[in-house]
Image 1: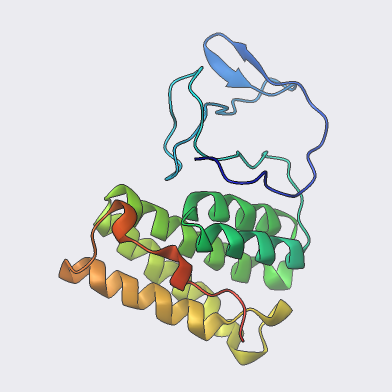
Image 2 (image 1 turned 120 degrees about the horizontal axis):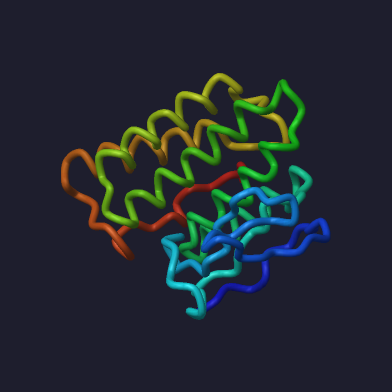
Amino acid sequence: MATEPVSGRQAPGRRSREGGRDRNETGQAQNQRPRDRYGRPMPHGSVGEVERVPDDAEFSATEGLEEAQRLLDEGYAFTAHEVLEAVWKSSPDPERELWRGLAQTAVGVTHAQRGNMVGAARLLRRGADRVEPFGPDAPHGVDVAGVAAFARALADDLDAGRARPGDGIDPSGMRLLGA
């Protein structure tokens, strides 16, 4: 089942397949294959299970946090990661590591959903390490303590074999904003 379209603005551009690879209008390789709910590429011509976030999507911090949380709540950690990455790419230097850590945490959840438990645990801990220094006064009200605690607890569960891939991984426990 596809999610609602991801909000955010896409710059105009033409997508084409040249030489068997997906490319944008400048010729850069860009994978435009549809994705399953865990972000894995599906064959060309398949009906994707999630709406793709365009590479040139732009989100304000508020839009990005709201959209990423909605996606996490619906179980779409990979797409949430794409939204957080879009904010990271356009964020001011003092905030870049915060957004990078949030994106790494979401992609860590994605790896867990896909069954890559070792890689997932590493990314989850790396993301927690990146967000924690922002402390209780993190920009935009991001609950870095909560995100870090979620990431470390999931990493511990993965290491101990207490978490199952796929739907056994619930990304809705990752709360980006404090109450």
